Structure formats: structure tokens, C-alpha cells
Image (cartoon, rainbow, N blue to C red; front, side, top):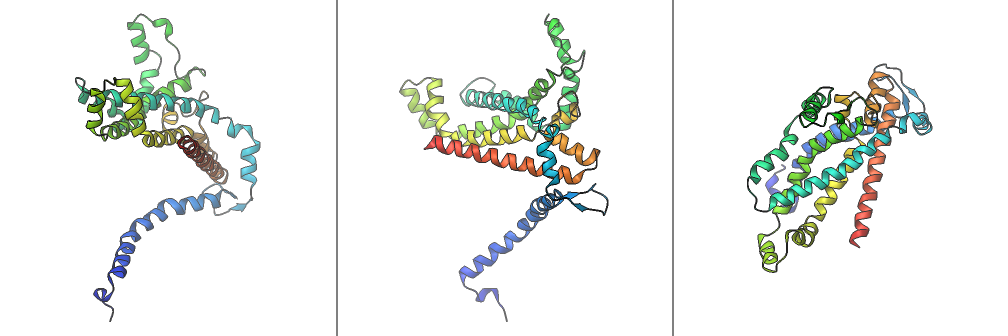
Length: 294
């Protein structure tokens, strides 16, 4: 008769590890890897997503994506969010560094900066929809400050709409980067700062020679996440404009292709292309940082 106690310690340890891993691995496979495998399969089909009729078309969906400029031209919109991600990280790092030192009401400022991260993306979209609307909060503020001549159609002017949306993105996601930077900066031993103060190092020198080298890994991680986010941005432009007036991103176009035009096969191919772009961008970034270390 099998008894668990008859097993050796090494065998017991191995069985316990396997039992603990079964449930999380099953959930991971069911909700992450299985949908991804299906996505690859659907990308080779002509299918409306509901019908039982599925026609295998090989690489036709991929050929259509790479030969039709309509699908790739929307990546120009991602450049606004790509540029905004650097501004976002720069501001988050600046505020995290400043609030790491002893200043008045720093607890209040930490709460203010992190607060947007607690808000739902839909709520933020509606808040800024009223903020940028004609005669909305921003226009009223500019009129109050006597700069009414700067008032524009923030969400209707093709030259400004993506700038407005990218600014909203900065406000929304900067809090997360800020709290990650602040946590990593506060993990640096206070003795190092005291030694730097004794040596006469000012705040800039402390940032350059203590903070930056200590949190470089965290900065790299945030940069990778920010670039990935700028390529796959969806919620803010979709909620605020629905992708109109030249604000359509690749993800919005993918969703429209699937649910508005009923082309699930083509939309799956677009999702696969986006996945590959993100993977390639991440590999390039990691290689770049590795070379910098060498």
C-alpha cells in the first residue's frame, strides 16, 4: 500500500512542489497560453467569429496586413505615445527623487501623484473628455488666466488630438512609475546618503552617483513596459474618441476589424503581428541595455 511517509525526503519534496504548481499552471495554460494558441490558429482562417464555417486561407491574412498601408499607417499614432512615455518616466523619476528627500507635505504629494493609478480607465476617459471638450474645464481655465487665444479644439483638431490623448496617458500612468521608482530609491541605505552629505555632495551629485546606478534595473524595466504600452495603447483613445479624427491605434483597428467588420481571422493575424512587434522591441531594448553594461 502506498504511503506518502514511506517516500524519501527528496521524493516528498518533489511531489509537494508539483501539487502546489498544478493549479496555477492549469490556470496559466487555460487563460493565457490556450487563447494564444487559438489566436495563432485563427490567424490562418477566414472566419467571422460566430459561424461554424471556417475557411483555411494560409498566410493570406498576413499578406493583406503587410501589403495594405491602411493597417500599418496607424502605427504613426503610437509615436505620440512613444514620445510621451519618455516624458512620463522622466517626470515620475524626478518626483520620486525629490520626494525621497525631506520636504514638507511629501506624504500629501505622494498621494496626489499616485491617485490617478487608483482610478478606473473608463472614469479617467470621461473626466478628460469633459476637460478637453469645447468650453470645458481647460478652455475655462485658459479664459480665466487671460490666455483665451490659446483655446483650440483639443479633440477635434487632427494636429492636436493625439497630443491631448498622450498627455492624458501621461497623467494616468505616471503614478505607477512614480511609486515603483520611489520604492526602489527608498531601498537604498540611508548611510550612503549620510556619507555623501559628509563628503559635501549636493542633490544632483547624489542622484547621479547614488540613485541612478542603484535603480538602473528598475528604470530599464519601466522603460520596457512603457514602450510596450505605447505600442499597444487602447483604452484612452477608444473611450475618448473611439479612434476618430486620426486617433485610431493599431489595437483599436484590430478590435474594429474583429467586432465591427466581423473579420476574426484577419484580426487574429493583426494581434499576432502586434505580439511579434512587442517581442522584437523588448529584445532590442534588452540587447541595448546589455551592451551599455558591457
